[in-house]
Image (tube, rainbow, N blue to C red; front, side):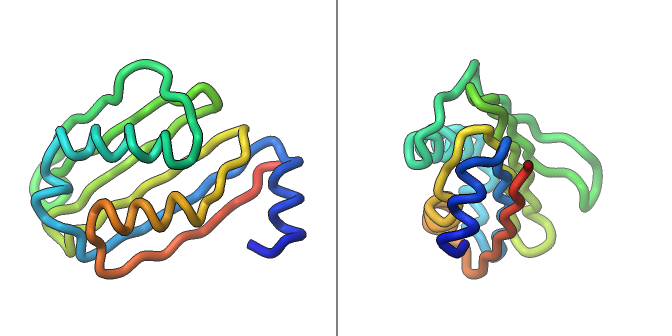
Length: 126
């Protein structure tokens, strides 16, 4: 984000970071323990306060089966979806009414899941 975009985001209602990872460590995206650890450390990294426990569930059938996770935060939520059958992918959405550094979230996510590729879109909600 440019300096002007950051200033606009800081004044907006909220910010959502939409993160796509591929080529992740297969074991990491299949471990509820690692997924919960990721959420805990991500919250610290982007200075968010978790509200309640992290929910992690595996459901779906066939190629759509995989883990999903949800963490409420005091200023909104973090959702995660994992695909271990088609490229070891992770899809992470962070929405908050409190400004956060989206690039920090991207860098941390990529490092934690050892992703080979990553991309992110940031949407300002105003």
